[in-house]
Image (cartoon, rainbow, N blue to C red):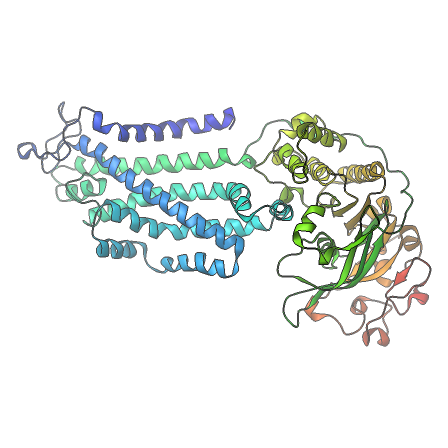
Length: 617
């Protein structure tokens, strides 16, 4: 927490601390007994002996206000804390594990929301009898579902982010992910919910006490004071003013404090004012020619990924390609073509609702032994992730934990594979290697303090920390401007050269990027490979209408006029009977619409899924 955050908390924090301190030291203050009656002084106006006057029974109003603060705040805080713990636990478990756990936690808790709040509280108090303990229990039951819904919604949002997926891929236990990764990231809205709950609990406690179902007389309570003052408000209106001021003032201070605290605890809301640091970008060397290819690093054979169920629609069908050490293979296609799904299948990070129906993904070890990644147990696959194979995701903002410093997250890649010595020095060296200016300072920064290009460099540093033999890059330049894109491409090329035999699979929809970085090209459409070959040959003479259409729509191409591809990629459950591209293809004939075409080899090293490739040539 920086000095700016402390300054923002100073005023509401000081006010809240003063209120709590005053309530705590009330028993030691020289105040009259709050329950001692003085009938002769009933409804007396403020005086030196009684600063706020005396109530309908002659009791000191100031003393009852302060003692009532102890009672009301104790009930509100205890009930809110109990509700926060129980509700957050239910919400985070239901949001993370889903299924039956969600039904037994969040859905059961939401049954409470079907009842009007005041009626539910009245029911519990009526059944168990009035009193502070009963009031705490009834308010906790009432407010726990609110925490459960907030925690559930935030957990659903956070669990799909890449930094949570990375923790799962590293083999972290569920408890560690829930407590150290998810809970800190969903804490800000829960803090706001806590402040609102305390305020609501104060008001509801006062309301129940006003009805005679809360704090039992003669114990002082703001609700009891308001109840007593109502009958004499015409003779002594100030008796109604004091408890109402105390109640509304405390509620306002609580809301202000928790709102400021949320901003301070969430580093995404802070700025450090370092525009010069954010604008500096390191110059990187231009990529050289690719390393010589030796077959055998990766082989994907007949990969089919489908939705669950006996009739699940295939999202990726019969995909196959190979990758040699030191080679860069680009997978291109429109959104929905299956590019990212294929990369996630290689990493073993497919969403839980998808399944691999058939196929093999063979990764060759250093000793030349090929292992099928689809048949490896999860524990063995975790040992490979981040070590032998690594992945750079599309959105670094979702891939980096916003509450952890950059250096800590890069170091985690090293710790996960046994590094114990000089980890911090290695982190700084990695950040320097990927071209981050002032790497020591960058290691101490939060992700939001870096630009988009710098965050992507951090992701690359974490991916190559253990010198993987296979690097998968899922559209790592999509969200970056053109200048930064070129620098990231140059960085990847330089890292690949430095890594020697490291192979790279580069997923993109941008053919201009492919021309700069790739050796070979795989074009995918609607979950299938429709063309494959060396980049220079495919660009010079495409053998599939979809590839030619992509090139014609590329601004960087040589066409005098850009052309758009009509229509859209078909949905997995609505694929055409023949060629999947036929409804959008100008070359399609009746034969294209009757039977799916097979992959053919028009030349050595080339493949195409088109019946009319000769005419296209």
